[in-house]
Length: 248
Image (cartoon, rainbow, N blue to C red):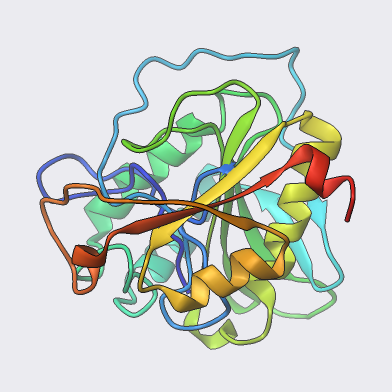
């Protein structure tokens, strides 16, 4: 399950995290199904880190079934496992990522968590289940400032994204974790809009976006140095605005 996240790796530029469907949160999102996810396929260097805000830390978040832990250095091996599955990356890249590529993406993901207080990447684990972190690992969620080539840098917006291990597909985890990130974004961070982007053919991610209350915003096309099947049909963006979320 994967969301295309703008800026996470193309073959011509150093890969950077991609989760679209991802809010302004940008991420390729979808239903809990193969290729679920959101994000942008074109790598974008985040550049110098400039923090905005008053120092609010990225918090531990919880849902009924998930502990969402802020991404840290110790989670690299879990990311390597996640991105080594070509099916998980089906709507992001034409192949699985190498370890070197994942390490670069990991560094960029950590940097992205320093840009706006309270936003960043989270690693999801099963709650109340015994076992190692690897056994309990579900996937990766993101709520980050706009950073992709088709994302305007608008204060108060965020890109939403997620990527779920194949063994946890079709169990509602992508939408469950995404709802909690959206709640955090509006209620705690004070966002005005969360958005997610994915390939037009990614029916799963589009269903997930809809299930958490997002609405279709636009269709668009991007240039990809490494086009994958279906990319010729373009991309879509879904959104959820604060005023609509408050009416839920």
